[in-house]
Length: 117
Image (cartoon, rainbow, N blue to C red; front, side, top):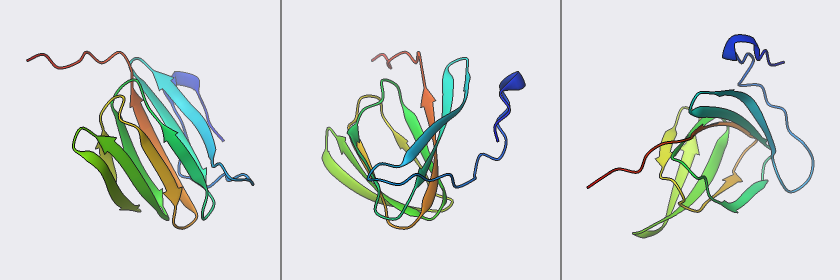
């Protein structure tokens, strides 16, 4: 259950899967500049290539996932086990596939200015 009063989310690591090919993604809270999403995967479910308009942090809370990210250097693959966190730059296409049943948090950063040279 989630309590959105005072920007508080509780029980955020709960595994709340759904049947089918795609995982269950739920926005847990949204605050000034940030959104927290929980994604519950069943083994083998895939979140196909997509992009985020701002930088994101992906944290694997339980289970394991494969993450593929396309950057200027090319396609990179990462295995995220429970306790792993990775940063993905804005607009980089990425794809997640569950190796095991898994719960992932994604923190989306909104309204972030691009770095200046």
